[in-house]
Amino acid sequence: MKQITVLGVGNILMQDEGFGVRVVEQLLKQYSFPQNVQILDGGTLGMELLRFLIETDKLILVDAVAGSLPPGSLYHFQNNEVKAYFKEKVSMHELGIQDVLAIMDVMEKPVQEIMILGVQPLTVDIGLEMTPIVAKKVDEIVEQILLVLHEWQVEVVKIDV
Image 1 (cartoon, rainbow, N blue to C red):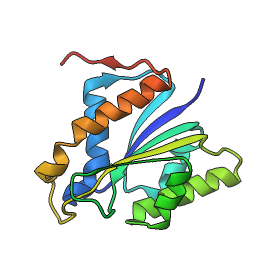
Image 2 (cartoon, rainbow, N blue to C red):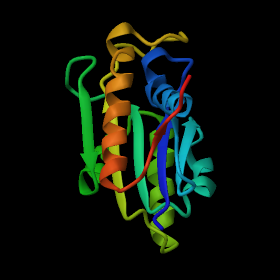
Image 3 (cartoon, rainbow, N blue to C red):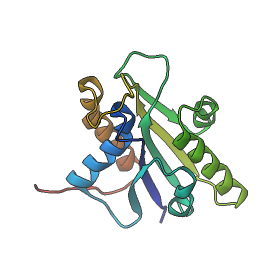
């Protein structure tokens, strides 16, 4: 059975930079996942993530993406597009993730399939709350993740709250 990780990264102390972590929090609050699916708050761990990702076959990485689109715009990169994305490092945690993936390749335990889902931040100033334009994208990304997991034949159960 393929090991799948949904990894949210970012710094929740920097407003929209915490987007990936907030998405993972929403997933954990609303859904139950089978044992082969790891939902992980990676925060700003960088290289420390290696021990959590070493057995991952498929990875969905959720993050704020500083691209050229207007704030609140969604990004979706897959497989080879991910390498191009990492050439434009935005933060230290992204540098760490790039290194983790490279080490996994060297160890001959590469991620077979990788996807980045993200949103263009409005601001990364100090603060605990995301801006409204970015916060309203959390549910949309959660739905995209659920669709990808369904395509990967993962059965997700909604938790009654």
